[in-house]
Structures are given as structure tokens and as C-alpha cells.
Length: 84
Image (cartoon, rainbow, N blue to C red; front, side, top):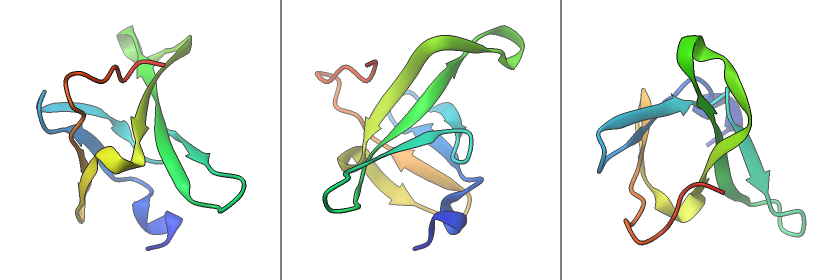
């Protein structure tokens, strides 16, 4: 799959049934040694969509359960803190 095919997909947390963001408005954490994607870094938004400085949700690549046509489903175990 190409990065361009991922762009624009909504990121949804399956446990919370909550939309976290859209890929393309997020950053990717990439392992410099092997080039693999390690995590999605999703900015936390406050009122009216203005970004707060430094607030983001880090979603490890291993927590992605399904990449569909329109969305990416993530499942983060409750014992792991997604705020970095």
C-alpha cells in the first residue's frame, strides 16, 4: 500500500467509537534504520479545530487492526497510555 492511498482516511478508535483524526493531518513516526512506520502521531484538537501546542496522540502501528476503504480502525489496550 502506498502512502497516498492512506491519505484522507479517518482514524477511528474501536473501543471508544471515536474519530481521532484524518490521515494526512497526522504525522508518521518512521524508523530511520529500516524505513518502517512505527506510529501515527495524531494532533489533539480543541474548540473550533485549533491545534493545541504539543498535544498529540501516539498510536503504535501494532494497534492498527484494519485499514479499510474509508477509515483506519485502531484498538489500543486500556492499560497502555496513548498520550505521549
